[in-house]
Amino acid sequence: MRLEVHVHGNIFLGRGVRLSQIEHALRPWLEYLDIETLAEAHSLEREEPGIQFDTRERTLSICWTGDVGRSFHNQITEAFKNLGPLTEYASEIEVTYYPENGEDEFYQMFVGPTPEAIHEFRRQCVIEDVSNMLSRHLGKAEVDQVSALVNQLFDQDWATRKLTGEAGAQSTSTVIPLHPRNKHLH
Image (cartoon, rainbow, N blue to C red; front, side, top):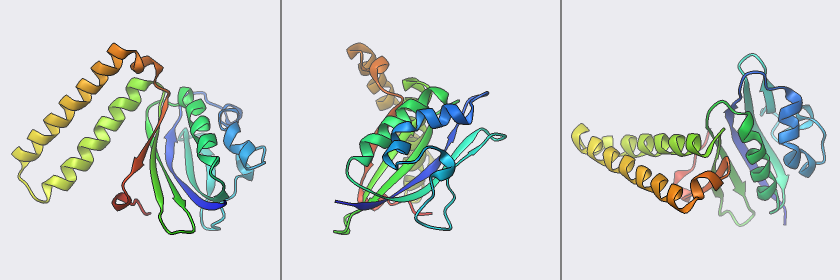
């Protein structure tokens, strides 16, 4: 079964990262598309730039739509995992699948240099999201109280991961399915 997917976000790369390294890391994605280079990764949507590497800003900008099958998700997950060691700090990439039945699937994928960097970035994202949502309904003191609880939960989660050995084993890319209400349109 074929479906349309949109991949969107910016990945911040470390100093000295070259295009050849990026293309090597993204090889699972490129091979899936049956192309050799990022320059060939054209989006189905003409106004979208596709996948572009800005050497001056050291960013990989992705705004790409394609026609894919279900195995695509495994390929992009592997590609982002490969890309993790080339990053300077963690980034979020949104992946949205549009199946014919109209039940869109939304994913947040995090790419970063270490499991700790991804964990901290996810913490920041959750605190920001929760704070923004609650600040429309509650005062600053209540929002700060909830933010403190979120911090505590993330600390507990990381401590548990360390005890169980999952902290070091965690890949440099994680996938979190989003609830359909959390659509991120641009």
